[in-house]
Length: 216
Image (spheres, rainbow, N blue to C red):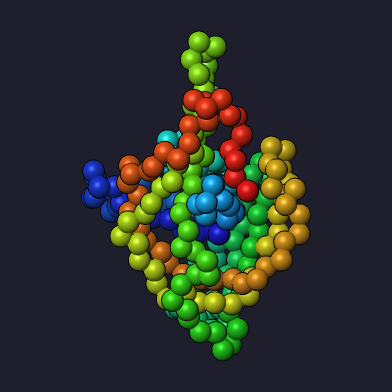
């Protein structure tokens, strides 16, 4: 996914228009469906953002965020050179780190495109893997697996079409090892939710002596 993200802080609701730079950012991510015990969930293994404050939230919640240049097509109905959002629309997005394109994706809607009400298989839980290495041999690392539920979830009509994706290489990226993948669909939509401090601890690896999550 490549998206334009917007957030409104419950502690500072005026921030959205008083400091727009603190309320908007671009994000690219690659996630997987996985299983912990009998629980099915989504784990976001790669996340790239273009704001440092969003990067900081990654360490708190357990998202593996990195700073990057994230760009995407912006539909503009009044621009004669761009199609409006709807049948025939084509959008693209890229993630670049250290001068290398590590992710490139495109979504194209056919002339007879229609909307659907839900993304295929998107109702699973959201897993967070939180690892904080200790700077001292006397203090243990933090290594935990959480389940984070979202509340107040809303979704726009979802335009369904075709898609393509390519993974690139950079000196400190591992995403190219995914190789070629089969794209079964491309989607354009808007989604909103509330993120709160309600994550549930599923497993503490440091306490159990395990160092690798048992996810498949």
